[in-house]
Length: 101
Ligand SMILES: [Ca+2]
Ligand SMILES: [Ca+2]
Image (cartoon, rainbow, N blue to C red; front, side):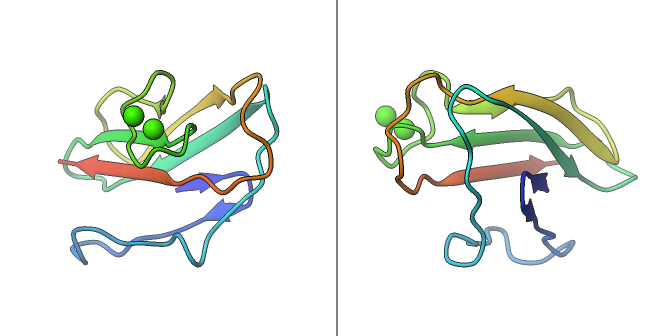
């Protein structure tokens, strides 16, 4: 998964959920277009979704928090998203990346 300065790899067939909140972070600017890519396997179509908890309430279901929803597929799923116009500045927010075959 790559976004801005984050480039993180989760091993195939490893833990169901991996927590990188203490090791990976990046600074995003407001109202800015960012490229994102998630590389999945080459043999089973993957359903990929990426979320950012922009309002910091602990969930990823509020409006605009799903930032990436590519068509199911193989290999590199790439696209872009635009950050909110007026987010709360200078706070840490969690991002979640999901891939399901
Ligand atoms: Ca939220
Ligand atoms: Ca909420």
